[in-house]
Length: 66
Image (cartoon, one colour):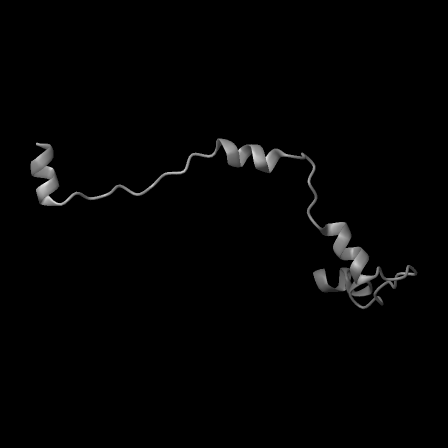
């Protein structure tokens, strides 16, 4: 029942566009990321906190500190 309702649509030819295809170089420029906020990345990097891994002390150093 369902197949017969859509039989016309299933076998219709696919529509063809009349427009020219965009040049690959222009297409790449269109989808390339852009800097909407100038200096934003730099200011975020300045505020970034860099952590260093904890250094393990030897038993001698631990005794010395105690």
